[in-house]
Amino acid sequence: MENKTMEPQTPTQIQQDLLIKAYAAFNARHIDSVLALMHSDVEWANGMEGGYVRGHAAVRDYWTRQWSLIDPHVEPQGFQLHESGRIVVHVHQVVQDLDGNLIHEQMVQHIYTIENGLIRQMDIQVL
Image 1 (cartoon, rainbow, N blue to C red):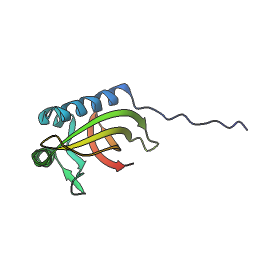
Image 2: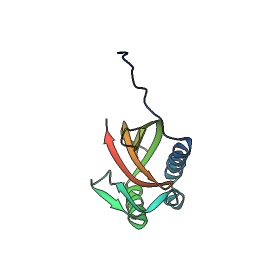
Image 3: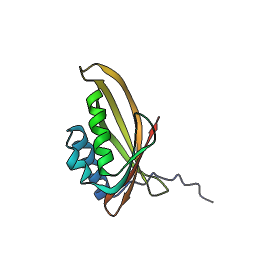
C-alpha cells in the first residue's frame, strides 16, 4: 500500500476573499463593513473576557469597548480548510495600547464557520 501524505486543503477563493475583506475592514475600524459580512446571529469569540458575543449589536458593542482600551491589528498569514469544513486562518496579531506601546504580539488561529456566504461563527486558538 502506498503511503500518501495528505496536503492541507484550502478554502475556496470566495471564502478567502470574504475573510480578507473582514480583516481589512476590522483593521480600518469600519464596523458596518465587517457586520455586512456576518450572519445576523453571528457568534464571535470574546478575546478579552472569554465566551462569545452574539449578533450584530453585541459585536458592535464589544469592538467599540475593545477599541476604547486597546489598538489590535490582525493580519491573515494563511488559510486552511479543516476536515470539519471550518476555515482556519493563521493570523499575526499585534496589540498596542492607545499610545502605541506594544502590549503583545503573537500568532493565533481564527477558526470560522461560513454559512450561506456569511461569517456564522469565529473562535480563537492561541498557538
